[in-house]
Image (cartoon, rainbow, N blue to C red; front, side, top):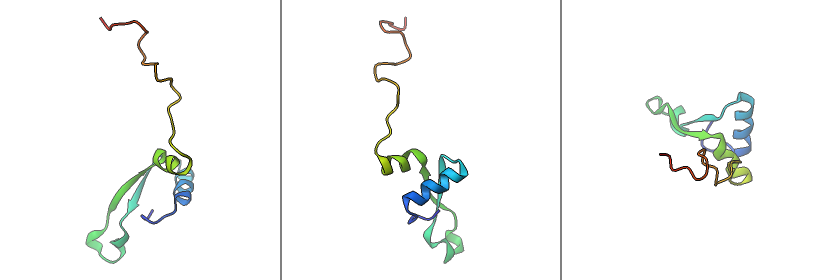
Length: 73
């Protein structure tokens, strides 16, 4: 995808591909073959955060995986 691809198109493309990660192509790659290659990455979570707001983890903050009161000793 290009850097100027609208976010809703980015989301649709990632959904069709069942991808959580996308590659942003360089804008100037068509004019200069030495500039060909990726210019960045798009992460699905970041796309969703821009479209609908920050995505929070469903795990309660107090839950750490260790029993409460445990010192780890």
